[in-house]
Length: 293
Length: 189
Image 1: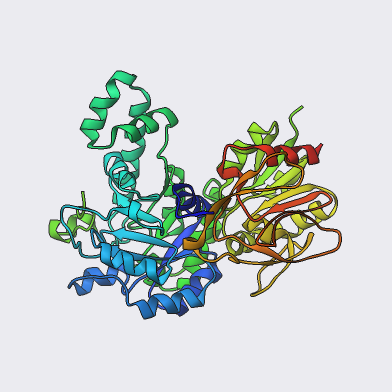
Image 2: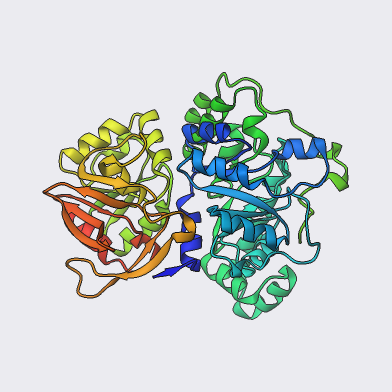
């Protein structure tokens, strides 16, 4: 009997496909998410929109809160650690969370190194802006990738940019000859073996979700149409005027993204979405996606 | 002829089942609506989150047509979440269940993700062990008299068959071994 294998880690990500993972800060919110049909919840201290507004150092959530959320639902529970903070990650593994998000939404603990994710039994998900960044994280042991997008803005534009970049670069690798792949690996700053694998299979070796700015059912459907395997929704649900309705509608639009009539139906009468932020209105220092490399 | 076999495609590892069914000689088709159910020789309920898939079945009016089709003889194979959905009961909680397989299932019985595992498993009818991947897996806590137990881990049944309904707590679709999908495709003929 073997535990913590690559297959078991990537396998859990496979089981989340076609689903929605929702940020929650209390056990009550976790129950609302599960009732709406979320495939997992992300336990955290503050949603990204509040981290943005309140500032200060954002850290791993209080273990008590994570345990309350674990006890409240039967679906998988994820939690965030700061980039490079392998001690926070060890704590989350000891708490028995199902997935660890090494996240740019929290304040980075290490500006040079990410966590060595191979050293853990618990699988990791990491954010990426392009193919090279995704393959560097997979090279460090990430079992799942998500776009970084721009968390807490309610603006999907960065998630679209990151997903389009990944798809474009994956397609390009497929057009290259074997002798061109080493140079491609150099240009992408990515492990050669992973570059070869992507060139052969035409896809990332792990599941790839959308995250960062998804606020409406149509946003979720858009990211699915762009080729994402599923969706993370951070502030979009519990900063909207009607969280249970938004949660349910985003779940339904993620499943039926190919059917605009369903997306139209579930989008009706939801009330106000979370307030959004124009990316141009954001100072460079307030951009979370540039954290990590 | 390749038998048309549906894969319930509301959420979960649909792509892996489509690939495994193709390797096993079937013609896989995603199922998202009642219309997709017509003309099928069998249906696979994939791995995923059973609470999510169950809620979507109910909300999109697929629950009763799917239950009636399987009860009426449509061959079905459920893996992990799919096994839970086929069952008549779960040991804890309340969620929509199709009730076409006479077992009560304990969800996440082996534990959370850190306890997920791979193991070489003896399966009735196979001449060598099957490499089985268990992810936050359930087990069968109680099986009816007509249910055949095909495999067990620590005496807990993890693969069962009752007539035209097959279920495993593990994920053969995550390996390249298509023997169990071939067994199911044979059941659809």
